[in-house]
Length: 127
Image: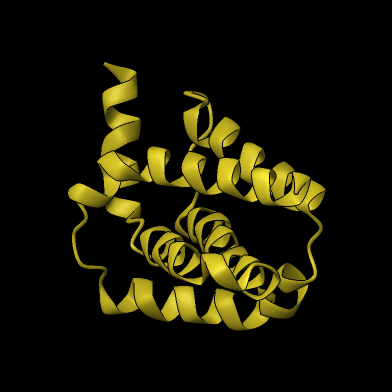
């Protein structure tokens, strides 16, 4: 029961953090999609074996670095975070089959994260 509550809280957090970004998502370039595919293939096995503690650490590290005005993530670093977060949704779908649809939506939203929008966000932080 406790794990189900954690999953619901986790999914709510992801949906809430992505609602604004997802509404404004631009289509990813072919280069970005290829980079995502490469990161997905090289990290899939590792991420699918993450514990919730490891995932939480990754998730909070991403937001800490993303929101730090002194840090500019490279394109590879940015997609490394977003693809790994998206990949963890596959694990959640396997662990909680009744939440498969929510996990698929979260994965889609994280894969739709756009580096160009991140750069715009960083520019607005400097103003």
